[in-house]
Amino acid sequence: MLARVRAAALLLLVAVAAACARGTDPHRVVDNLLATRGSRFFDALQALARARGWDPVEATRYDSGEGSSHGRAVGTLDDGRARRLGAEILVTLRSRAVAVPGVSALKLLLLDADGRLLDSVSCGLDSRYGDADADVLGAPAADGAKIVVRFHPRQGGHWHNWHVLTVGGRAYTFREREKALPTKWNAKGLCRLAVRAGKLAVVFPDLNEAGR
Image (cartoon, rainbow, N blue to C red; front, side, top):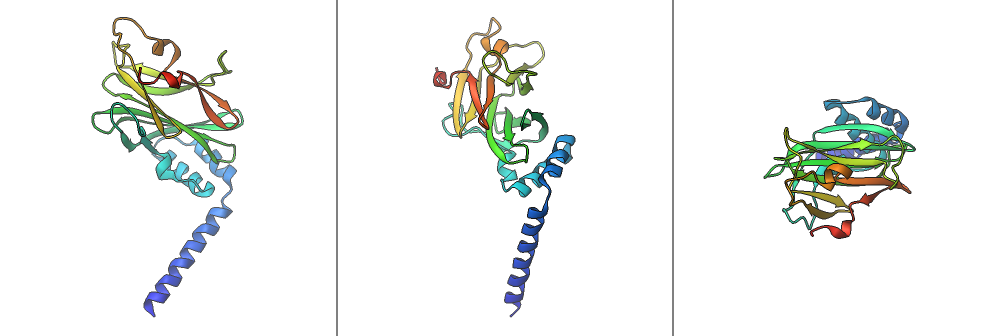
């Protein structure tokens, strides 16, 4: 009898939670996300995820994916912000060190105006050399890029040995062997992304050149 009562109570709690989620105004939650920084940002992100039915734990988790030549790196991202990107919203999530050895990780989430998760792209690099961050261009560049993932080196440096792009759950590793001169990655960015039909499209580098 007690077990049946507990089961009925649990079902009631689940129903109430579902009803609350359905009753959440997604626009209000989106506005809250855009206005929030610091530790409360992730509370706002989780509230939006629950309201829109996507997994907040998976969304805030960096996973370099299968196929990385430097091993699979997995960790939790702990710094975030959101900004409008035309009709969509771009969420930038970062961590300076995930996994061992240290990987500086960046994950970009593309949401629609109502907070539905549309797409994601990640970038990781050896944290000994620097970090990655994303710049949003005021207008699309000649190649169509609207978002540029840039390398920010440690003081006095300009070089990094490798970085991994994770697109569609697959890892693409790019190496840089020349240390003496600034590289194409300094000039063009580690990755250049356009937004096309609700997806993040890689316009640079050519993913077919990964591993070379």
